[in-house]
Image 1 (cartoon, rainbow, N blue to C red):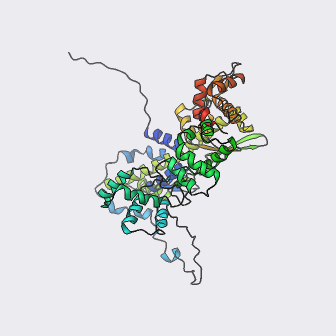
Image 2 (cartoon, rainbow, N blue to C red):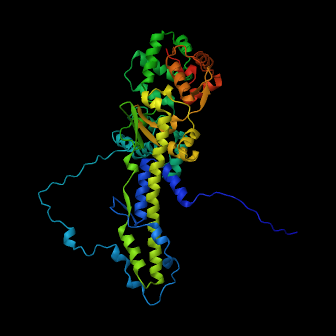
Image 3 (cartoon, helix red, strand yellow):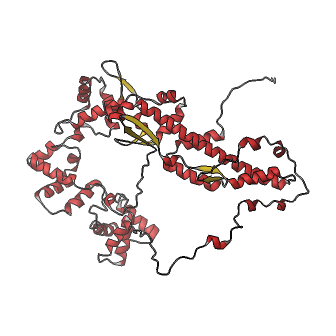
Length: 488
């Protein structure tokens, strides 16, 4: 049986403009500049720089019934109005745009650029110093090409033999490849071409000048590597019958080695990410002053040429369908440019208001720089202060940096949960982590404190925290367990 009923449903949807605004708010300074360049290229009605007067007003043309309901006229051809003439500078003679004041004896002051050599190319260049047959050189170059950026050869010899046969047509055996690998191990930086950490450390130790400590270090890495990595120093002392001072010197030799030899290459091609602070906080006469990076406030205006084209169409009496299509395009670009300028202004205001609220909420920290002064603060606290949605505050804090008198900080690091101390007061988890870190730094490294003892110490300091919570905070601080912190 078919039934028909009427149902009312209230729903909320974001407009495309709101979605674009949210995306703009989320962008940090460098990404915002790239987005701005893209918009300037895509929209010819948007121009950089300041303009003395804004001729284009959206309402002026949105209420134009003549434009919206126009059906066109067949008496006027599209060629009667040349859109290009409003964009061209043909009235300016060419000679005014050229100069001929360059002398033959003028120097060309070009900035020289250093050509970097890649890590793998440097290794191949070093192979030229070895006397190898053509087949050996092909194998050596293949091995070098298989080394990763850390300097390791993380493939088995059998896989390399099979790969050379299938992809390069080089037929060889494991024994030959092992022999050539010893040649690769002679390359700099020492340790390159190792198949694991143990071999990497051994290669570096064998390149050192032989001393008592170096010889003992080679023996330990070669025969007692597991005991060394687990810091079973008592076993090593008993095994070799040496004093603690001798073992300490030997461990010092090992600690000076590089576990990632490829990372030390000066010409490596890894991209270094530069952080551009989006805000700056300064202390002036005991008061905090917040500024927004000027690169977030570009000078933009709507193109006068496009405004003139739209005004010319409005004043025209006879119009064709083709002209109407052209003007629709022009109006669309003008509207888009006007909205983009408004969105940037709204982005600036949102960023500044949100960061200003964070600054005043954490005023005590920004004045003295002590991390223990950070208050518990969640997204809802700031959202309620500025009257914005929690998701908007999250977008501002997630990928933005602020330059403070104590260094450049990621804004989201100022947010933390609250925990109760023994007096029932709310304290930040950041404060507890800082105290935990200080306790671990001050511990006796010959007898590091396990998590249950750390929990007891923090409880004595007024922070009743369970052992499992200590373990969680320790892992978040990237601090190893007690056994791995042990030193002689």
